Image (tube, rainbow, N blue to C red; front, side, top):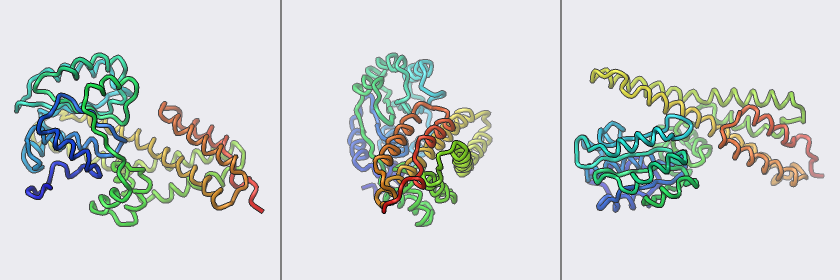
Length: 359
């Protein structure tokens, strides 16, 4: 499809053929706003830059000067907005509105990419609505959201919606192998990433992945009904999760070093260092949450396996345990104290070692 170029602007968008086709057609006669909806790590963020490159250059060629700057997040006419706190505040929305009104710096069109807009405060949504409905003729909005919560419904109705699917394990595995991972590491990382390519890349560089999953899988058999065991188990799980952030922290250190080198080369001070550090904090928080979600999924799987393999004769107790785990997964959305949340969960879960075995 893009054979005339050595690299297409869509090269980093994985497993989203339908969305790419929709956006390629949309770039011919673009409207004022688009809403990209899909789970974290589905490459909708990469697609936003790809679409911005197509809008500004009119070409699929990723090697042109403008396309390279856009894909690297450094083009002056593509403004990316990321939340600075737990949610996108009214103050940030005011800044978005102000920037949307400014004329493009280099060309005739500018693109505003708004990240994680499912975390937009309701008051901010109301303020942004008019700008999204009637932006300056030179401005195109690309709004990114993991899902569409009630406070985003009105904004969504003003945008052309493009849906992004969860990436298949096979597609993630192939990307990881192409990027240099071994087949075994790619297989394990793809299985643990739950369709999130960003997370899969971190996991593929993590030699402790299988140990961590085995640790979570052993929890149901390790429980003995005592609080002491629960506290010790949670401490061990927590320490393992903290250690799992090492590959991500190494990548962050490289990004900071690269940013400092580019800033020094052009004589800048700061050079976006604060924004990068804020993003790194968010990524570490999300990585921890993803680790917990993945680990809880492994625990739930251990209970299901016990029933399938007839290692327990109390399927009602196992069903209650799985339901309790799902409640904990939902509670993670509210940013609780994770240690207390895990301790409360494990105190409620039955021990597979104590459940009666089949006769």
